[in-house]
Length: 474
Image 1: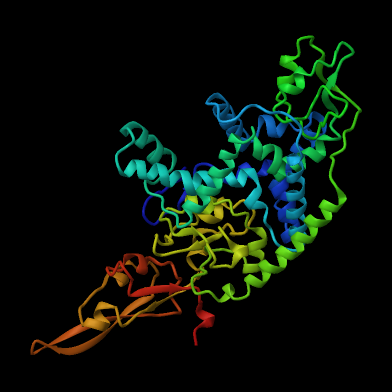
Image 2: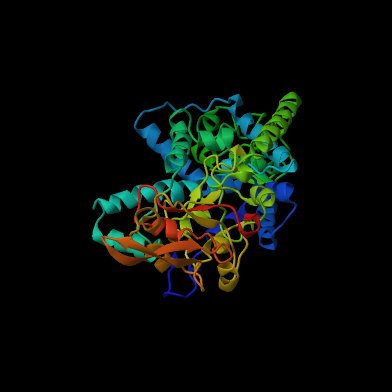
């Protein structure tokens, strides 16, 4: 929830989206490999590593919110008959380990791709960038009861409208992962999730596992009801795949399965050649992505949030979770398409077509889970320059048509104002009139974009923001 406060006061968060990531060692490790930086608060993820070494892969079955969604959709798809339950062991489960190797090796080479595949990042991004705009449209067209509107938009979310340029692409990715459950139950969890693969490696060594008792007659019922094809009734039981859902224990007619201490260790059946291919693919992908970064570094539309680290460090730290975009009160922050090259897909960029950076707001730094956006005080944030405004004098009403317009100057938040007027005396209808022509002082402009957003020429504003800063202006 966002507390908008009073005019001139600092905005604050009543909750912490970023704290969901402190239970995610995959994000912690991959971000550390890519940036060589570690936030102390993420040492909490060590607790989940230790718990996994004791209990096994409990996170996937009992904690992960994205896993819960997949379990729910698997249940729905089975009930409506979109697929027949098939628990036969398939090699799909190996894919997630190759994805894990690919991401970690890429992180070692300085490219952090974890946010595209981490389940916690996907669910935050999916809800914040895709589902919230959908709900916002329902609100706009009066499809929601008033009671729900008040609770949802005023007390929980803090604002009514959400618009994101990449909402369709993010939503499509989010929905495809859910629809895959119509092919095989919990397909993402079993076959694609790199966090699940990380916990799978750890659970090989867990102290507690599901064990067979001597009373087992090898009927195979437990294997039939195993959601994740771990096959607890066979000697080839894969504890690395077991999510501790305990369906097998419940369905065993003889009570021959139990969850107890075990010294037996099951290996993850991963081919060395496949690991080498994953690593080589990471090298090739990193090379292509870094080449794609060269030109976008000069892109005029690459406007980063205030407090962002230098571009290289920013890309290594940012996990593309969308948290900063979700809390931006005026919708200024948008998921990038190719403004930062392929490597920067879905990272936050400022876009004044959608909104503007509020002068007394520093929420993006408060919510960033990895430090890609520094947490600034309000006074520090007000001094940060993210871009510079320029006039298109062929479109600006005072410059092009000798018509007075003061909208941009009125809304400029800096003190003294970055937009000022130059008086020009002209003859109009036989009379001498004074036209106030707006100008930009680049030494005062911070690039907040409010002038662009408020410009009355809404189709193509007569003032625009580029990523160039004071030092780049001759």
